[in-house]
Image (cartoon, rainbow, N blue to C red; front, side, top):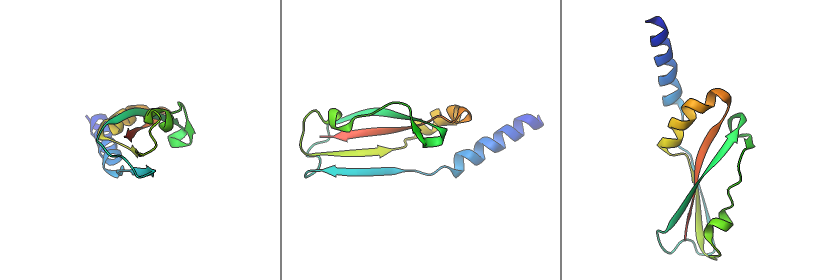
Length: 97
């Protein structure tokens, strides 16, 4: 029972000490519609080393005006809660055209 309480306490501490993070880049005049493309960006060593490459320009599909949003969603926090033990974190990159 002590182990369960300790695990629950650590889980709640980690859960409540996380913060919401969002970064927005506007290219040209920005998005003119709400058409979005999303991909997951994976990092090792708690965000220091990117594992995969998300090309926002390719996601824009040749558009000259678009908005890039990098954010950590609730689902990303849930995934990272399990993968952060091996130093893997995730965030979502969205491109609005």
